[in-house]
Structures are given as structure tokens and as C-alpha cells.
Image (spheres, rainbow, N blue to C red):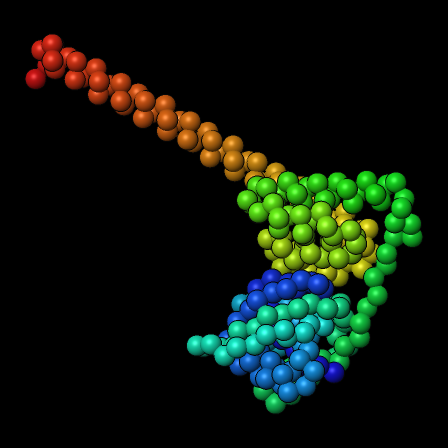
Length: 238
């Protein structure tokens, strides 16, 4: 039974670190209650981000989260969240100025054989696409090595990448709720491919626009040069 921290933007995953600023009353009170106890909250996203924190606006699955740092700032409380474990909320209740939840941890379904050739190929392909997308986003090489190359646990890896991906809340929540690690990785690969496709399309559009602008600027320059030559020769009409 722990305080509920409503997330109005994004979804927190186990093992992921998320800095947030609590500005709404129920979130600030939940943080205050947690700091008086074991510094744990149930971080759960809102179904309607623009709506109010309410029992029917919380998703059922969230993440048991540790508050690794808190600081009072103007207008609220700055918090560093450290996601720990997936959990289901069996019941939400209203406390003194905040919500609390009765939660139970959920277990993932890991692949029966992680040395299976097909799973190894899936893991390798997902890492390659994550690396490629990181390059598009100009993520430093050292960060890519730490998050992608050095992360050899399939569950931790998928959660880390899912946490970093810029996806709609419903898509991220779906990944959070997918307990089958292999299925979650397949779904993550689809999202990575889609984001890479978008980045490639945007790069091509930008290149095409710059090429057209370059041609136009060159034509304008040549026209100005021709006009100047005519003026020098006295051939330009008044």
C-alpha cells in the first residue's frame, strides 16, 4: 500500500531514470508521504494526460519507484525517479490530499531458451536498429555503447530503449503491460523501424528542400551577374 505519483507525461519503465517536477497538489503530497516512509511510490500514467488525477483516470499497471532525489523548487517539487518493478494496482484509494494504491508485483515471461538462434537474431536486430536510431538522434557514441552494446539482458534492454523512445503514451503503456519479453522486444522493434523510417523521410525532405533552395539561389545570383554585365555594357533597358 504506497502513495501514487500520477505521471502526466510519458511512462516510466523498470530500470529507467526519469526526472520530473511535481506541480499538482496530489503529486506533491504523495512525494511528501513517501519521503516520510521508505521513499517509494507507485508511478502510474494518466489515461487522459490533460485530465485530473482520479481512480478512473489511472492505468492499472505502473511501476514501483524509488525517489532517489527530491528538491523543493519554485512552483513544485523536483524529483528523480528510479523505476524498480512492474506492478498491478488492485485498488486505488484517496488519502489525505493524495491517492494511494494497493499493489502487487508482476512477473515477466522470459524466453524459454535465450540461446535459441531465432531469439538471438531478434535481439541482435533490435540492438542494431536502436543503434541506428541513436545515430539519427545524434546520441553520443559512449551513451549508445552504455545503453545498447553493454546491455545484454533482454528485459532490461527493452525497458531501457522503450523508456528513451519518443512514443505516444498509449504505445509506451502497451510496451509496459507486455509481460512476455520476446513479444515486447518484437513490438519495440516495430516502433524502432517506424521511427527510423520517419527520420529517413525527414532527412530526404530536408535535403530536397535545401537542393531546391540552392538551385534557386544560384539562379538568382546568375541573373544578378547577367544584369550587372548588361548594365556595364549599356544593354539593359531603362
